[in-house]
Image (cartoon, rainbow, N blue to C red):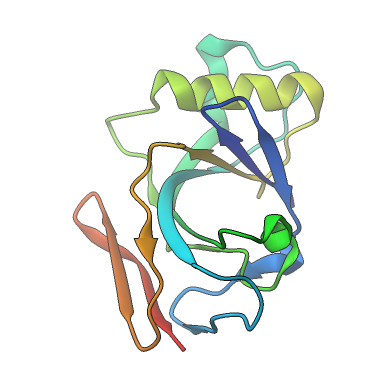
Length: 155
């Protein structure tokens, strides 16, 4: 499984599956780095194998979406490799609203350079997303389509 983060400034990051934190479990503030913040971004789970996907067929490759909770430290560029580098919420069906053009583009771009496989996760991160400070003993609940998908307590 690959977890690929696309940023709106053109950066593509790959997160190891061993670095994913678990939803509904505590997230421990690392003892390295300073000025930790978090934000969330939409995530899509690939549901079938594909290579060279055309834009008009991109929606066929995704059945579920969620939110990704992404922590960052001001002075720690290696945060992508730490345990709990991001936490994926509970998956919900894409539904009638379908995919945005940015989500379709992410699927097409990934399938152009790499074979996408069932279980791969694509995250569309925005540099303009509001960053929130991370506070010890804080409870974080995130909703998507009226459902709680992320539930974390900071320790």
